Image 1 (cartoon, one colour):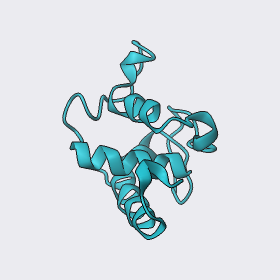
Image 2 (cartoon, rainbow, N blue to C red):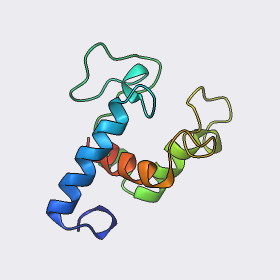
Image 3 (cartoon, one colour):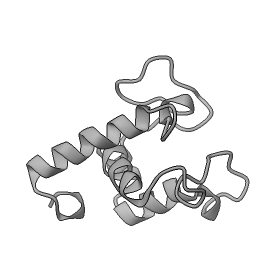
Image 4 (tube, one colour):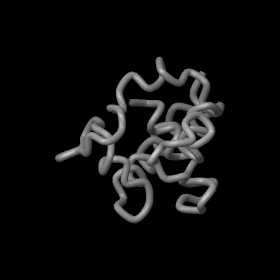
Length: 102
């Protein structure tokens, strides 16, 4: 089943939009801290974003991690993208689907 019950074409569009958020320097900017597919000159502060579906099979857990990583690691330097309003709820949903696809 596609993430969040999306049809394949819809899922592809959400992944595309999520990738744009991940690489947007004023939004996700995941590449600043993480190595990820399609990224040039990635940061190495955070873990590589690979095999994400195996690492986070539960989309809700991945969303929690991206929204506010302090729940799993109070000393994290990862910005709380959801809690601090860096990303809207819709942007967060798209980003999560994209990250899990890596």
